[in-house]
Image 1 (cartoon, rainbow, N blue to C red):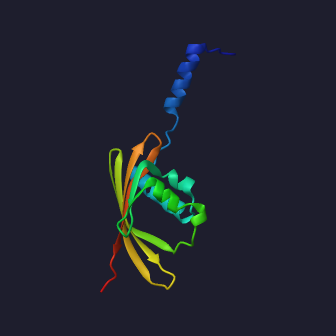
Image 2 (image 1 turned 135 degrees about the vertical axis):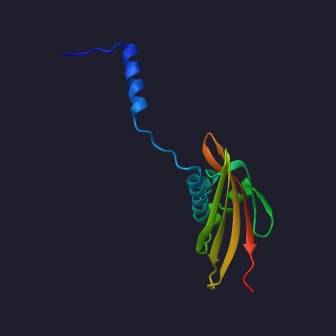
Image 3 (image 1 turned 60 degrees about the vertical axis):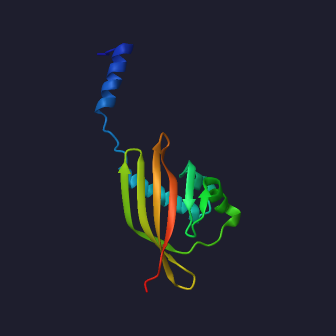
Length: 149
C-alpha cells in the first residue's frame, strides 16, 4: 500500500521529526570561553593573524605587561608572520571563568619558561562578549607576578 502525504502533511511530518530529533548540546559558556582563549593563545604562538583576528572583537584592546594599551590593529600587526620568533614554553593554571549573560571574564596564571630556564609568572584577565558570531575577546590585561623573595 502506498500512502501519499500532501504538502501540508509533509511539512507537519518534517516538523514532528525535527521536534523528536535529539538536540545537540551547545558547549557550556565557561568551556566556550576557555576554548576561545586557547584559540587566541594558539594563534599568537603561530603568528597567525587571520586565526587571531577570528578571536578578537572589532573593539579589542590589550594592556601589555609593561602597561601599554594596544589596539586590535596593533596586536594583529605584532603577530604578523614576518615578525615570527620562537615563543617560550608556557603553561596555564588557576583558570576562573565567570559568565553573565553575553559578557564573560576569565583569569588565569601563565608560567613562562625563559631560555635560561628561569620561570616567570603572569596573571592574565580576559573579557569576552557573545555576538551572533559566537564569543570574541574584547580585552586582555597582562600583569606580571613578581618573583618570590
